[in-house]
Length: 250
Image 1: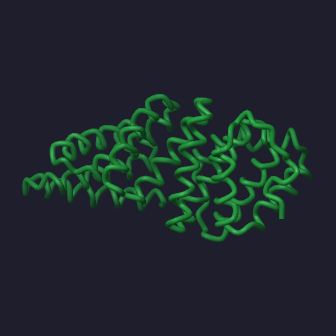
Image 2: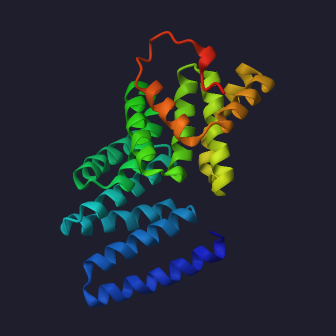
Image 3: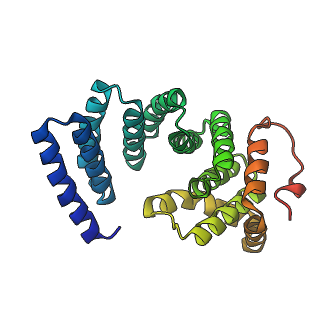
């Protein structure tokens, strides 16, 4: 969304918010506040986004709207991680996960599980990150959710990098990039910037030629095959010795 589109969205949702307040429609007010939070986040006004989300969250709690609560907690988690508060994001996502499970909301569940995997990886809680990511991949595979699947594979690549499995990490980055290209869903600036250390470590350690070979190998794999194999790997004991020669081989 371009700057002008954000400004238009903010104006329209501001009008909707005023109307819902006038009508006493708390559900409408909460939804409009979430939309305004998304717009503020897109404009990098994180303080305003947090304020909108927190007001919406209070309303959703009062209405016992579990889906609304989970969505808003997930959005607050995004704000927290953008401010490098990964521990705070973890707490928010964990509550959202409980609600997503209770509501059996598969769309929400995939997002929250991938976000939990991300923050746990960056907090170096790798054993727990692996479990959340494996569960998330299973749901993604069942739904055929390739858009969130691209992000999930990139988080798995980060986890693989932290675990020293750099061939696997390069292949997963390649698989994710192929998905992003096919679906025309480039990563946003924050996502690219915060993943750069893992990408750089892979290339520096493997060397440019080897890293590119593994990226191409990953990109050539079918989405279901990559997801299935990665889910299986994530559930393995992190300390188990593995034969790297077969990692995502073509």
